[in-house]
Image (tube, rainbow, N blue to C red):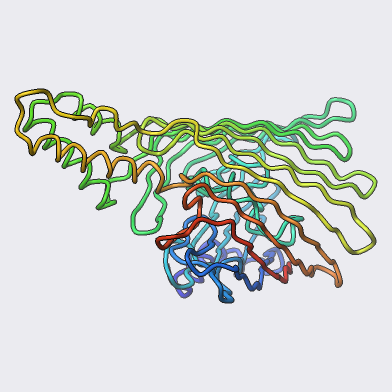
Length: 411
């Protein structure tokens, strides 16, 4: 979607309201201007779903973005919201996307319903993870935030909030579907159901969430070729276990779940944020455990922080069914299965947040002006294999030092 299209989409829900009551339309925005680099030219560091990233050169596209939001209150029970985002995501160049576009219905003081395109509540900072100014860290840890490819959902959600003494409890249930462009293919989530529970008490926030969906990836050429080759070999050599492996790898209405738990604290200048998550799928996408812990201490307008994050693969598609063929089979059978086994092992460490790695991060945030913050962050990334690095060349092993400086702002 280009910028002209985005502007048109943002304007649609506002044309009539502006004509009637222009002063009720609220326009706000956010952005990040950043430079990112690494000390290794054999692989590229990128955010999730970017086709290229930074190596031993300075890149602006890894951590930079610009967002615009329009809100219109129709009356005391109905409001309209649209949000557009410009960034590098899925393509080499900057592109625009309509991240939010919903109507909000106020049923009571404690109950709200939204319908349209809404943020998918699967992370601690789902609604504002692209708003750099709202976060301590320069970017959310990729080890955890790469594990779900969907940022939004086309559907509806219900939010209920109630106070219990000094504690407020918010529950959110979202349902719908989404088709998301990824690097070179699309991921579709059907029958998405996400439950988000948040408890807040003074400086403490505790969050728990669970989401499930049916995942389909039907336009990834390499995956389709592999599945087709497995089925041809299984049928041709009369090996049903190979056909069963093809069914296991194929991503067609495959069940996927994501469960997470998070805690945040901002108390007496101490800042803490942590999340722990489990991903499980019934396709080639690996089962994973991911987590991070961030701690910082505010000194005037400065907030130095440290983060430790990790992504671990719990279970991957096994190539055990692709061993040697039974005695008496043609010699080409075993050679074919060995070749397919290598392809299966490759697919188990590529794709949507598939690689293992750990990262140690130090950084500092400086709120030097109203609504503007300067951040400097250094990551020491230790991948296992390629980890989450992309476009890796032979000989890449890590660890890699990643540096970034960013100017975050809201208006």
